[in-house]
Amino acid sequence: MTALSAAAIADYESRHPEVFNPPVWKRFLPLFIAAGIVLYVVYCWWFFSIGTVLASGQWQRAEIYARDWVSYAVRATVKMSPEATTVSYPRFSELGNNPNPDWVIKNGNDVSIRFGSSKSLDINAQRVIATRGSESLTILLEPNGAKPQGTLPKWAQLKEDQVTVNFGFAGQADIIPERVVVSRRFLGWANFVFDTASPFWGKSFGEVMSMITSGERIKPEMSNAALAFDNIWYNSSWQHGDVWTKLLQTIVMAFIGTLLATIIAFPLAFVAARNIMPNFFANQITKRFFDFLRSVDMLIWALFFTRAFGPGPLAGIAAIFFTDTGTLGKVYSETLENIDDKQREGVKSVGASPVNVQRYGVVPQVLPVFASQALYFWESNTRSATIIGAVGAGGIGLKLWEAMRTNTNWHNVAYMVVLILIVIFIFDNISNALRSRLTGKQH
Image (tube, rainbow, N blue to C red; front, top):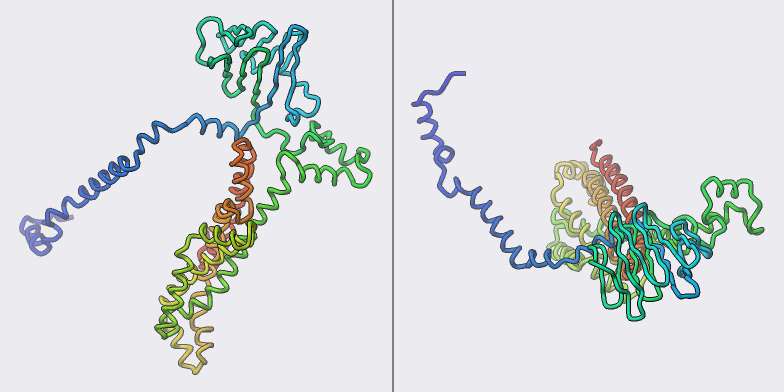
């Protein structure tokens, strides 16, 4: 490669001064943009008090909620008296009607609660000994309160007459005179398949299959297989039947709302497109109608229709229908205004009627794009239907909000979130595959 001479370089510079000698502001434009972005971030940090919000955030609650998504707690109450020490469980305990867990060891009037290999509570009427690893704490039970002996370790807390002992993920115990309330935590979802009232509860998979295939009928009026399905579907703890019904409602809401919006937006888009309908007033009225429908957020429409129709999927369908009619109408009309007129002129040149001109000269061009956009909105509305359901528009969103509002059923929340993610994943892949085929792109 021949090197350029100084004269040739000078010649290039003289012919292209904007490249070799740009103005000062162009030279430093990237630096100005970067500095502007940094200043804007600093301003937002100050204006929204992000540092204060992060510092004052109750991060321990996030940890508790995350833990409750993947685990469950069993509560037990140990009551001490000189005559006897008793262990009781809640009426609807995860352990069933006659609990006898292996982590509770009763020996006369002494009770030992195991929280793992090196974590335990040893309880009698006079004192409680809490052990966590190499540390142990003795709490005397006196009439005027629980009295810890010695220095409190980091995992114990004294509040008035109560000592709370924290064993980490394994659970905790609240120690007060005459009573110790234990919360023992386990990984997983308790009684997810069968609840404690089911005759299949507590049985292994092999035992359940044996009862279904060769066992005597538990209920004469139905087979054991039908009974097992009925017990799963109407599980009182997890309410699988109601959750799956609400999930199907959400899917139907998204499908019907999007379908109706597509059907209405399709002909109206031809009226709104200037090159299809050369009528200024018709164009403007239709476009303003689209603007009105899409300018109101779907959530607001859902609140409005919930008031009009009452809570239920009809309100959700109407909210999706109104919002998507406006959005699809605008997108469709803009697509029509950007078509290639040569194909339409070719159909018109053979003497076709105005309707056939649109049918054969316009529709084949835009139909794949229209269908692709409708599929994308259907996929998106499957997610949106969950949100609008939370304000009363039916579907799984309403049930999800009810579970979150109790602040105790976070494992049920996790279950519904997982189902929503699976449905969205499936619908996303179906929509992408169909849109790729419609637009001629194979992935």
